[in-house]
Length: 258
Image (cartoon, rainbow, N blue to C red; front, top):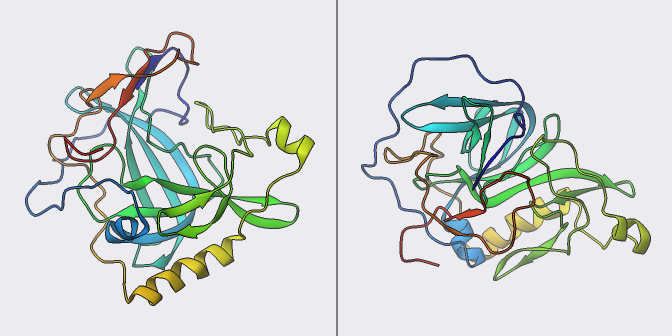
C-alpha cells in the first residue's frame, strides 16, 4: 500500500453521496488462504464475465478511499450474478489528490472484458477472490486470459490456476491497457489456454469432484474494514512509484494464516 502523487487511476472521482452502513459481520464466513484448487472452489460464490464500464473513486473520513469498478453485460459461468456488478476495492484517491495503492487488489482496465472469481466469504480488501480477475486479450487470433502479473492462464492443477511467466506489462495506476512485454515480442508468446477452454476445464474439475460453487457474493466489506487501517508489513525492495510509501498489505485472510 502506498500514497502517491498520481492522479486517479480510476477515472473521475465520484460525487459525494450519503454513506450506507457496512455489511454486518454476523454469520459471514471468514476468508482463508487460497493455496489449492479445493480452497479456491470452496470460497467461490460465482465466476462471472463482464465488461468494465466504469472505474471511479469514493471517499469518506470513516472508511477512507475505495475504488469502485462496475462490470456491465455480466453473465455467470458458475453460480449466479446480476447483469451489472459493483466491485468495491480498498484504495483510491485521497482528498489531497494523492492515491492510496493497495497490493493484492487487482487493477481493472476500463473497456476491457474480465473473467472474475467472486468471494462467498467476508472480505476487507476486495470481493475478488485472491486476485482471480483475468483480463480477456486477443493474442495471435486467440482469446486468452491474462492474470494480475501479466501471465497467461495455462491450465489448472491441484494447486490452483496455472499461469505462464509474464507476457503483458502490469496494469498501471492510470488503468491503461498494458502492452506486450518486449521479451515476449522478441521470443514469442507462450501458449495460453483459450478463454472457452479454460471455462470448460473449470466446470469439468468441479463435476469430477462432485462439487458446486455455493454462497453469496457480498458487495460491501465487513464492518471493521477501512482502507486507511489495512494491516501492513514493510515491503521488500524500493517503491517503483515516486513518492509512494513502500508498504505491503496483508491479504484477505485471518490473522495468523500465511
